Amino acid sequence: MEESFFEIAHLADRGVLYLLLILSVVSLGLIAERYWVLSRAARRAAKVETRIQEMLGTAQIEKFAELESVGGPLEDRAVRLGVEAIQASQGKGLREAFDTFILLERPRLERSLGFLATVGANAPYIGLFGTVLGIMKAFRDLGSAAEGSQGAVMAGISGALIATAAGLMVAIPAVLAFNYLQKLVKKVTTTLEALRELAVIVSERK
Image (cartoon, rainbow, N blue to C red):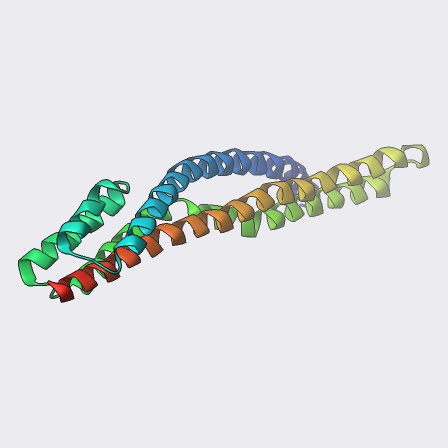
């Protein structure tokens, strides 16, 4: 029974490294994809925010409608939503419509961020698990090794620590990327909220 356990532990030790490698590749791919999408969205949102600031004093529905060509597809849909709500119902239910719109769009913006958060939180533990398995095997070999072969056993212990280092190397980029990408999501949603408030102002002046 004990022999079987250590054989499994030896295989699991290597499996942990392969798992961390897979997680690293997947995480880097998702980071690149989300950065490409969200950085472009944030730049477009910044343009819309600049125009919103210029319009605060003289906000009219005609000027508000012109914002449709300033930002990206997301802001365009938000502007159309505001214009249609103002024209159809004099702004009644406008805030609720925008809130629903933002609520539906946020998960699309945050797509894959949950995976990055999970990797960032758990990769160190996965690496530590691999290290524990490696050290268990190394100490077992130490107990049955001759004096001259103890150097090889110590090399096995140092090798086991690679799993912990690998876990940290996977986790740190995932955590940093998650925090940065969350800021980009916040930037875009803040712009949508600003459009909502501007639409409310326009409806009150109409």
